[in-house]
Image (cartoon, rainbow, N blue to C red; front, side, top):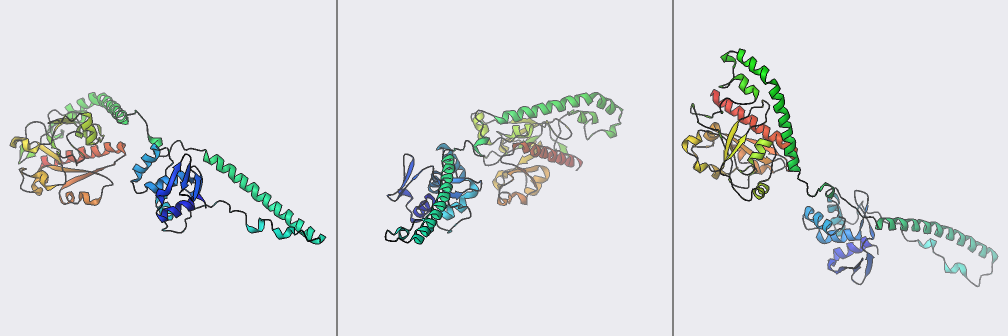
Length: 411
């Protein structure tokens, strides 16, 4: 019985608890004993043969989440079964399928025709021709046995070599870098890029100022000097129009206070200023639980390089009537109760006067955005892992916000 067949037999019988490791061997009850590092006939899609140790650990832990299984296998220094092999391997070991293309059996034992026949050595036979024939048969058999033995010895050498090979890294472990904070590297890189852009803008400043002074008032920006806007700063803060009146002070952006949303009072500054998404739970630990009442963010990057300050708050109930006139945007949670006691009669009025944004992971289910798709809000998607794409999402927010403010100023 080979290790793979024995493991399949015990799995189907429900006797996995009888497979016990003793030093460097696995004992299958009182039936079989195999070395833990013995190669089985099951070949992974990556080309290597799985060892008995790998398959025993997998079949006893196949019910847990694959990422947890990979982590536990690394902790026990046991090579893991790859994700692509899990389903077909489990089906074979549990008996759902009778065979698999991944199984590569070792060369079979010597067939009966290679085994010496006792009748060929009859002591009562004195016939020379018979002896000659028997000798010819023996020579042929010895020749075949020699070839088979050479092949077997060669396979044994390969097995010995493979048995002592140990993988140092897999495709997940190789990505691990201890004591490295790549977030700080990304922020530093972003700041260097902003400094480069600032220097370039400064170099163009003198020419733009001279040009703006020569232009008529009708050629200037909406409420801003053309030179001021193009140079990268505002002569006065942008205002939110409501009912034809301009709200006083810095514009306000509202975020949910609930943690189940992606953007909160804790991580909004890194996202809107630096273009980097940091999970809320990570920011809470960094800030040691200190909850800010208000956060000031600046639009430091966009296609027109304008720098504008905004207040970010997460307690709408604390806003005064005059504060509501300064609210320009809101990150929605996707729940009706978020807008309870807000000074708007319905969603139509709310999202006509305030632009709404809904942040989601790009691979989230469609159901997660089912409610907000019924509202007049902008859905912005980010990746769970590709942080270099966050900057484009933040830029999309600023572009949408400025477009909305300009449209309101014309209405």
